[in-house]
Image 1 (tube, rainbow, N blue to C red):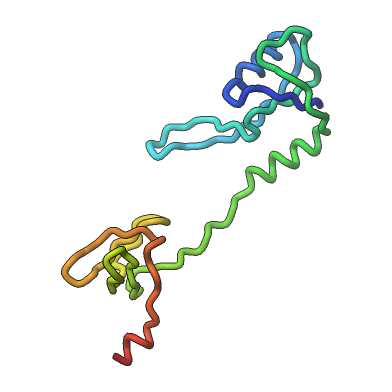
Image 2 (image 1 turned 135 degrees about the vertical axis):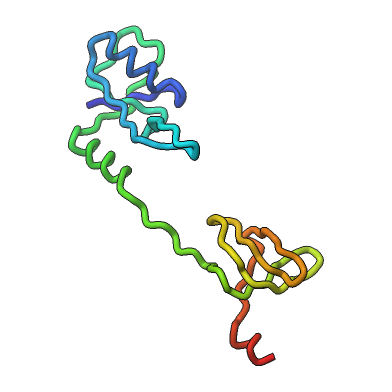
Length: 146
């Protein structure tokens, strides 16, 4: 099976063009969902299309890059779809943290982890939503000895 280069936004049109010319074309796609539960098909290899041949006149199919065996293609596709482990979250509710700001560090306690990047921190008189990049864990033994 040959690998052809196409414009990254025109893979579906290139596949349709090849199918109209009675050439078997393969465009690996995977299912996806947006936050609003709208389903769509995401292209696994943007800018590439896999086909047996290329017609003489093709608008969307640009050039032949190489050749790949079907078994290798299915292996690559199955590896792409494998589930990746989620990164461990360094912060959890109840952790004592220091917020690094321009005016100086502020001590606080995490109330809630809102997402991978944001947490809700109780900093005494204020409750702040803070980026994880600005947080530093405080040593709990050092605060207990004070």
